[in-house]
Image 1 (spheres, one colour):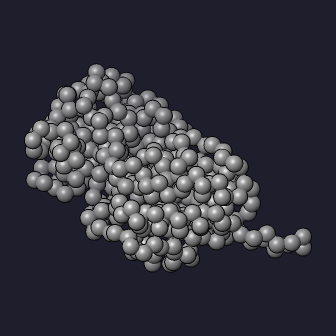
Image 2 (cartoon, rainbow, N blue to C red):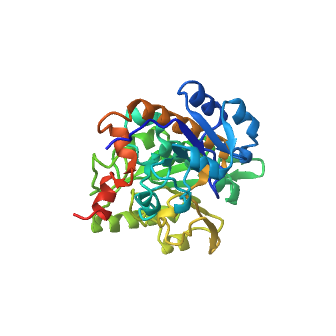
Image 3 (cartoon, helix red, strand yellow):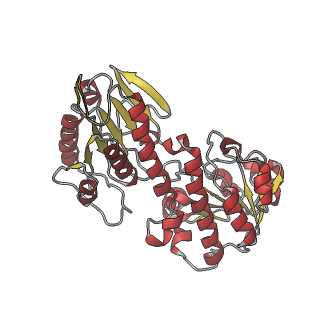
Length: 377
């Protein structure tokens, strides 16, 4: 089923509790000038980045009240806000980043109002979708920020220091998960002079890890899947036992551990047990980027920083928001690229990017995950 009409008015709304901005004035100007959209935006949209409403107006957008934006817009764009049923106008299209495979019960309000919903984190990880790939954009920043944040808390130094007063040894950093976030964390830690080790269940990640100057840790007996979109897949019990023992032995000697391992729609794999944290030296740091989905560390609490026997544990899956200007710049390009592609391809039957990222079409489930879970056989 395709949408009946091309959206002509796009409404851009602030996202509560997230200071990132999904569309900046530069991309808004392209939407109005190149794609001929009418743009409505909520006052104060760019306040967190010191962007004034006038800059959006100079780009061709119109400032409007929230209620008016809902009433007049064919498409509503925000980062990850879930709207209440009274806000949703029938047959409106919503575009955001909803982590829908993990939070799959929050779309009833949209379904009840015959809405269409696209979630950009469902886009297939293909060459065609690279310019729209919000996951890679945010993961890269999160990996970088995880290293910087841990360096601020760690009570030692990252590079080796040789002075007249003696030598300080470099920090030992362990990265769990060598996807986009993990690779960026490796590169950043190496630039700062740390000794870096990295673990990933995918043997294919080893070459990339080594190319960045890190030591690759691997466990025999892993299972890989070409259909996993670059993510890890669940492993056998025997493999998980060997994996946990090997990781435990490396954690014991690490000063900083950054964990990034996630499986879409599933609870994050447990990689850092309490006994491993107990074995770390006081002053060490763990950054758990999978905290939102249960965490890789047994002690992690999402959106909290805690202390355990002198070890700092940071549970934060949204570290890109710590650097909102950089994050917003990338997100704005991602959202613009998707809107441009959607305008060109939305009348195509079964377009792989649009069908892959669509959850609802005028109130009807379209994504296989939701059809299997919520639609009667």
